[in-house]
Image (tube, rainbow, N blue to C red; front, side, top):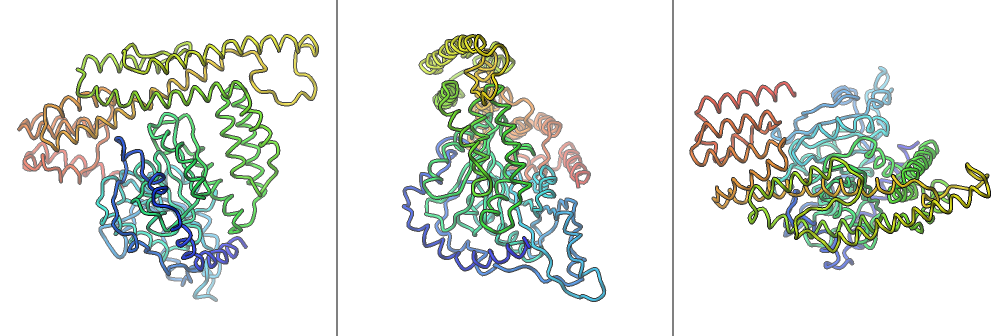
Length: 599
């Protein structure tokens, strides 16, 4: 029945596709520039930055809408085995391109007609599709990470092995056309429920594809926001944005809320105490639930009361946990997620009341103010640190790194600020005032508790309802919130500076400034000692200077730390002179052996 509903809905989508184009073109170009120009265009970052002169040629799925595939017995037997990840499937129309594939294990149980001698053809159930973009072209990585979710929710997943950061636009366009046309014509895909997913630069590629390339139902963007070409896009989609509070792009994701709302995008922005990486499974499950409940609201699938009840229960538990910990912004985020998933599907009164109570709580106001102060400070400190890369010596950077590491280790939760004079003293003063205000409110909370106990006795008064944390006396949790925010702030700064140094060192190498590049690489390795890119960059410098032994040593160190891109190494201009060296051949053999084992 769900499949029938989905097919009927899809026919309507096909008929109205052109209407959505004309409606969106009424949006002013200036507004779309505000929404689509990513933070990365104004400051360093990673991702796909393209300038398109035309997007008309990219409507590659026009006319491809279908109610499904009529499978023959032979075609069904030729499909890859369901329930396992196929890491490398070569595209039929372009053998230089490949993708990873996961067909849900439940698919094997559906087409019973093809398992009997009485039928030669049968229409098989359609599956919603998620196409994932990893910034390094690791197509199987998101499939391995989210396989349990794909199986549980019944999504067919594909991961591109070719889409990656830094590709030219014409190459990217060709890869996407080839990939999508093969998937929707080969597998039992519900073309009315095609979703894109990406991390970092892959997230930018996902939004760009959904805006300009072809119509999709939704995009799950992780660790980065939108990327666009400055033109009002022809397509719109549901958007679920995700970033950890330790991710240097979290501010960019949060800033999307208002322009997306004004542009009429159905969307939700989610955060968690993580870093710049593919989200953990439990966070991605929320995204799967969100796009699935949207499909229920849109009558693409039947409502699932068991799922909506589960979302309500788990959201309520998350809210209660964060209220106990006195992390009120996190409790509010859980309320908003529940409301975003459950509206029109389940009762919302309890979540609405809880959200109203939290937003009027002095503790929430104080904690949210502190978060916003740190975000503002971050903008100022980023610029100061970028300037310091060339103006400060290594002793300064070593002291900075020690200071950052000390802040991340622990303490009493007070705002441990840098000793350097130029790092935002005014904001620090404001932060201290917020925390001092918290202490006085704690004293007031203790006084109210004593008064209440004199009336009710110790324990909870009957039917008192759920209280906000100001009404209880627990000083450590409020301090714990500030300390956690300080720690996540420090992680964002370290991650941002690591990325900046990576980009700056590449820029200096392209200009031929080897001495400057060496200094930046030293800072890069100081900040991210386990990142193989610092050793790879240093190997390039050594090779340019004719220091072949040192270059080979750095390449071997990069491999120990996880470097495995043999194609990039073989194409690297600086390493051409090393190709006949036995040490370089040994490195190639080592990487090829690793690649064979991985396969």
